[in-house]
Amino acid sequence: MNSMENFTNAYAAMHQQMKNELLHHEPESDEKCIFSYAQIPWSPGDQVSLFLIRNTTTGALKLVKKTWDSDYDIKRFSTGIFNLSRLCIETSTARLSAEQREMSTSMLDNLTDLPESLEMPGCIVLDGIEYEMTISTDRISKNYQWRMATDDLDIFKPLIDFCLYLVR
Image (tube, rainbow, N blue to C red; front, top):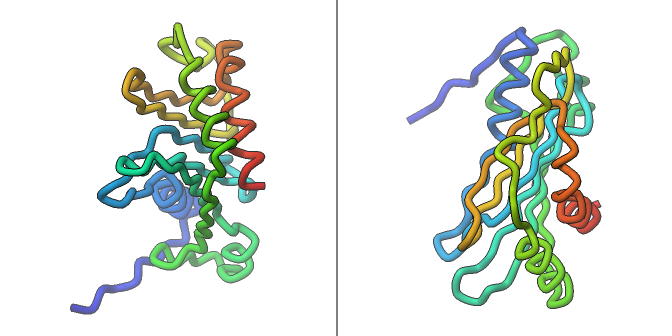
Protein backbone atom coordinates (compact mmCIF):
# COMPACT_ATOMS: atom_id res chain seq x y z
CA MET A 1 0.00 0.00 0.00
CA ASN A 2 1.41 3.38 -0.96
CA SER A 3 1.22 6.11 1.63
CA MET A 4 0.75 9.70 0.66
CA GLU A 5 3.17 12.41 1.68
CA ASN A 6 1.81 14.93 4.19
CA PHE A 7 2.51 18.60 3.34
CA THR A 8 1.71 21.84 5.14
CA ASN A 9 2.57 25.50 4.97
CA ALA A 10 1.87 25.95 8.70
CA TYR A 11 4.96 26.20 10.88
CA ALA A 12 2.86 25.19 13.91
CA ALA A 13 1.86 21.90 12.23
CA MET A 14 5.46 21.22 11.26
CA HIS A 15 6.62 22.06 14.80
CA GLN A 16 4.06 19.67 16.31
CA GLN A 17 5.16 16.85 13.99
CA MET A 18 8.83 17.49 14.83
CA LYS A 19 7.99 17.49 18.56
CA ASN A 20 6.05 14.22 18.23
CA GLU A 21 9.00 12.58 16.48
CA LEU A 22 11.54 13.84 19.01
CA LEU A 23 9.48 12.74 22.02
CA HIS A 24 8.84 9.23 20.72
CA HIS A 25 11.40 6.46 21.09
CA GLU A 26 10.40 2.83 21.04
CA PRO A 27 12.82 0.68 23.06
CA GLU A 28 13.53 -2.91 22.01
CA SER A 29 11.53 -5.68 23.70
CA ASP A 30 14.30 -6.29 26.27
CA GLU A 31 14.79 -2.58 27.05
CA LYS A 32 13.15 0.01 29.25
CA CYS A 33 13.47 3.80 29.14
CA ILE A 34 14.37 4.86 32.68
CA PHE A 35 14.94 8.57 32.00
CA SER A 36 14.04 10.95 29.22
CA TYR A 37 14.57 14.67 28.77
CA ALA A 38 13.59 17.00 25.96
CA GLN A 39 13.96 20.68 25.21
CA ILE A 40 11.86 21.91 22.32
CA PRO A 41 12.20 25.62 21.49
CA TRP A 42 9.48 27.19 19.35
CA SER A 43 12.04 28.79 17.04
CA PRO A 44 14.15 26.53 14.81
CA GLY A 45 17.35 25.27 16.43
CA ASP A 46 18.49 23.38 19.52
CA GLN A 47 15.61 20.89 19.66
CA VAL A 48 16.87 17.77 21.41
CA SER A 49 15.57 14.73 23.24
CA LEU A 50 17.49 12.15 25.27
CA PHE A 51 16.47 8.65 26.30
CA LEU A 52 18.43 6.67 28.88
CA ILE A 53 17.65 3.04 28.09
CA ARG A 54 18.37 0.04 30.34
CA ASN A 55 18.65 -3.47 28.95
CA THR A 56 16.39 -5.49 31.27
CA THR A 57 18.48 -8.64 30.79
CA THR A 58 22.06 -7.37 31.09
CA GLY A 59 21.57 -4.05 32.92
CA ALA A 60 23.62 -2.28 30.24
CA LEU A 61 22.71 1.35 29.59
CA LYS A 62 22.65 3.32 26.38
CA LEU A 63 21.76 6.92 25.70
CA VAL A 64 19.75 7.76 22.60
CA LYS A 65 19.84 11.35 21.36
CA LYS A 66 17.40 12.73 18.81
CA THR A 67 17.75 16.16 17.24
CA TRP A 68 15.94 18.06 14.55
CA ASP A 69 18.21 19.41 11.81
CA SER A 70 16.27 22.65 11.49
CA ASP A 71 18.82 24.25 9.15
CA TYR A 72 18.39 21.42 6.67
CA ASP A 73 14.59 21.44 6.79
CA ILE A 74 14.24 25.22 6.69
CA LYS A 75 16.55 25.43 3.65
CA ARG A 76 14.89 22.48 1.96
CA PHE A 77 11.47 23.98 2.52
CA SER A 78 12.40 27.57 1.64
CA THR A 79 9.16 27.83 -0.33
CA GLY A 80 7.27 27.60 2.95
CA ILE A 81 5.91 24.13 2.26
CA PHE A 82 6.95 21.52 4.80
CA ASN A 83 6.86 17.78 4.11
CA LEU A 84 5.73 16.37 7.45
CA SER A 85 6.54 12.85 6.24
CA ARG A 86 10.24 13.63 5.77
CA LEU A 87 11.48 15.86 8.57
CA CYS A 88 15.20 15.57 9.23
CA ILE A 89 15.33 13.91 12.64
CA GLU A 90 18.82 12.63 13.46
CA THR A 91 19.33 9.84 15.98
CA SER A 92 22.57 8.80 17.64
CA THR A 93 23.27 6.20 20.31
CA ALA A 94 26.03 6.03 22.91
CA ARG A 95 26.67 2.93 25.00
CA LEU A 96 27.62 3.82 28.55
CA SER A 97 30.81 2.47 30.07
CA ALA A 98 30.66 0.71 33.43
CA GLU A 99 31.77 3.93 35.15
CA GLN A 100 29.16 6.03 33.31
CA ARG A 101 26.49 3.43 34.12
CA GLU A 102 27.42 3.57 37.80
CA MET A 103 27.33 7.38 37.81
CA SER A 104 23.96 7.65 36.10
CA THR A 105 22.43 4.91 38.27
CA SER A 106 23.73 6.66 41.38
CA MET A 107 22.21 9.98 40.28
CA LEU A 108 18.84 8.32 39.68
CA ASP A 109 19.02 6.46 43.01
CA ASN A 110 19.78 9.71 44.85
CA LEU A 111 16.60 11.40 43.62
CA THR A 112 14.33 11.66 46.66
CA ASP A 113 11.52 13.94 47.78
CA LEU A 114 10.56 14.75 44.22
CA PRO A 115 8.39 17.80 43.58
CA GLU A 116 4.89 17.43 42.17
CA SER A 117 5.63 19.99 39.45
CA LEU A 118 8.53 21.93 37.99
CA GLU A 119 6.34 24.60 36.36
CA MET A 120 6.63 28.08 37.89
CA PRO A 121 3.03 29.08 38.67
CA GLY A 122 1.65 32.29 37.25
CA CYS A 123 4.27 32.80 34.54
CA ILE A 124 3.41 33.59 30.96
CA VAL A 125 6.02 32.55 28.41
CA LEU A 126 5.56 33.40 24.75
CA ASP A 127 7.52 31.48 22.14
CA GLY A 128 9.72 29.90 24.79
CA ILE A 129 11.18 26.45 25.21
CA GLU A 130 9.00 23.50 26.16
CA TYR A 131 10.71 21.01 28.46
CA GLU A 132 9.67 17.45 29.24
CA MET A 133 11.25 14.91 31.56
CA THR A 134 10.22 11.41 32.59
CA ILE A 135 11.76 9.18 35.24
CA SER A 136 10.65 5.55 35.28
CA THR A 137 12.66 3.35 37.63
CA ASP A 138 11.64 0.62 40.05
CA ARG A 139 10.91 3.25 42.71
CA ILE A 140 10.09 6.39 40.72
CA SER A 141 7.47 7.04 38.08
CA LYS A 142 7.25 10.75 37.38
CA ASN A 143 6.49 12.97 34.38
CA TYR A 144 7.25 16.67 34.23
CA GLN A 145 6.48 19.39 31.70
CA TRP A 146 7.44 23.04 32.09
CA ARG A 147 8.37 26.25 30.35
CA MET A 148 9.59 28.29 33.33
CA ALA A 149 11.04 25.99 36.00
CA THR A 150 11.02 26.36 39.74
CA ASP A 151 14.22 26.02 41.76
CA ASP A 152 13.29 22.34 42.21
CA LEU A 153 14.85 21.71 38.80
CA ASP A 154 18.24 21.95 40.55
CA ILE A 155 17.87 18.42 41.96
CA PHE A 156 17.73 17.06 38.39
CA LYS A 157 20.47 19.25 36.86
CA PRO A 158 23.39 16.86 37.55
CA LEU A 159 21.61 14.02 35.72
CA ILE A 160 20.45 16.25 32.84
CA ASP A 161 23.89 17.82 32.44
CA PHE A 162 25.59 14.40 32.63
CA CYS A 163 23.37 13.02 29.84
CA LEU A 164 23.84 16.11 27.69
CA TYR A 165 27.61 15.84 28.22
CA LEU A 166 27.66 12.18 27.13
CA VAL A 167 26.08 13.00 23.75
CA ARG A 168 27.65 16.38 22.98
